[in-house]
Length: 148
Image (cartoon, rainbow, N blue to C red; front, side, top):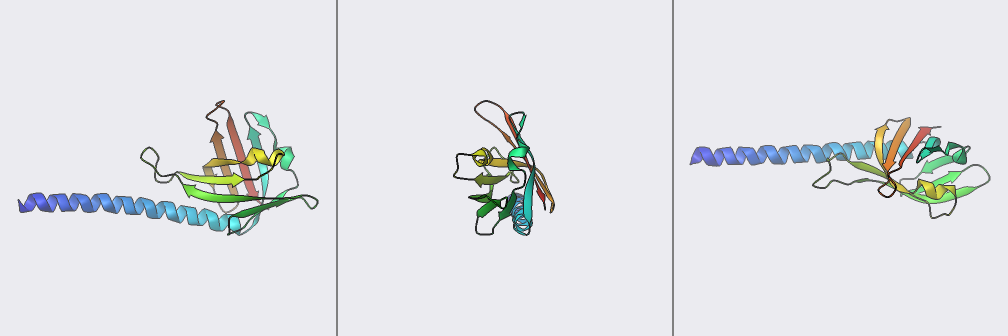
């Protein structure tokens, strides 16, 4: 009986240890990305909207992501404000590291095309590559920010 109880306790300890490690890893990655994003000014170097290259729509715009969740895009003449966040959509069918880069501009111009909960392809201190597969038409969008 003691062996059974010891085995069960050990099993539970291993399970909860793994979950905490995954949460910690996800939180560390999220904090790292947030720190990278807010530490500099960024520009869009790639925006593919369902196969159409629309990068030129954002040429000359510098994006400043603030730690309070606001984002500002300016080209010296026009300034557009929006919001951003990074969320972990951890659920029963997602991996614990399923982070989303959320962008929202309350506009009816080219910037509304950026509104989405983007999935990360890769991220570093100088480049963030994002993807979104549309549930409606099945189109795939790509968005890349690079540090100025």
